[in-house]
Length: 528
Image (cartoon, rainbow, N blue to C red; front, side):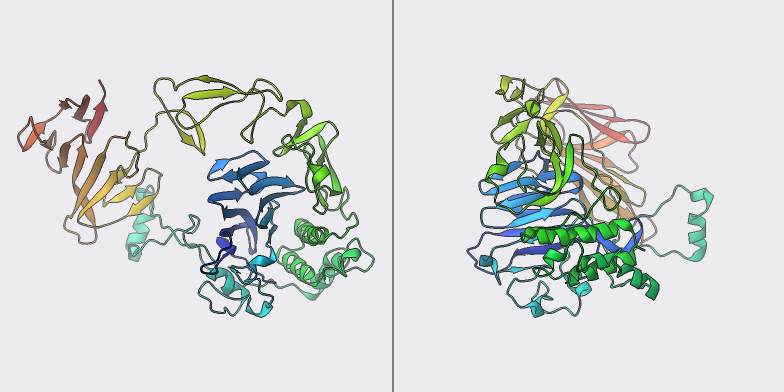
């Protein structure tokens, strides 16, 4: 049992054996702090990479597959399903991998015995030898759980960006000037890396420890006449008790921490087929169920859904606790709806009544679900003017044209299209933007900027900007206001300065206008 309170993304388990014939998979968990407490972290989301798909299980039963939000249940590919089961969302494969996440704090990864000694990660190598469960990715042994967790941090995750190299150093006078009201609009941004977790075990006095160990708190797990007594002979509660005591001490007896600890043990017992006596009630760790549903401490792990209304009759899994739809209602994603409002199913996907969708990312055909259980009606369609067909959050649709802006200013600071700021003082020529994808329908362009020093070797400024587009090369040069340097293959001298405004056109059916609005020079594409 490890206690690790990092707040980045970590590998839980993945196939590590070289030349293995077993199916490849990878399970990662991203942790976060909550409520200002840094002694305890919680799982924020879980990512499962398997069968060339990336399935992300997020809080609130939100599921995305390859970046697109999906409706449960679903089958992204043959042998891979994602479904609801009690309080969990479950990813199941035909080779025995099973990943459960309750959307709050608890993750469970199950593997068949064929993967023994073939895996690695924070969950260990599954070789039956607990003594080597401190192996890091390089195969060395870490001295403690904190070092182990840090070694399995996923280094390329966006929540842990690299630090900026060589931040500027200012003396006290300059710092005071920067902080004054005269320069109140000036700000310096630094992107710090996700720091390694530090082992900071909570400290509680003896009175608090005794209270935590009582049957009113964590002691309920061990109580011989308590609701978990049937499980003691199958799964010892000691490790769960220690986890419970750690969390309650760190979180100052927070009731939610106690409920989460009890739930973890109850779930583990039920997964082993043990019947757990009802331990929740209206005032102790109550479960708030959505509309048209109710709580049951031991219900089927395969609920009735719009997609599979007869699922309970063929379910062989142990019971789970959770919210169950009332009579006459079926589970649709995360809510219970009347059985007559389940909508349409097409190619293993569900569509609500009245919903419309494009069949693919060409926006050439749109379909609609007219009524419950009916077939989709589809017709040829296209995007309206001033719109383009594309994907947003993985969903194809017609979206109005918008523009991203990248700005380079001052000494210089780079503000990217996605609003990230870089500070870079090089004095060569650098690519600002160009087409990098394989979409042949997009016009090819390239924008470069050349920097220079101006008296201070620590600071550089933009000296010229070059734009290459439609076979033309246009240079916007410092100290040449109201004109640009233009190079073309034909029709103009090889290199010439032209006064603004300037219109350029060719047999390729394009027009390019170059103008100066106040100080900036603006290039604008003008279609015929």
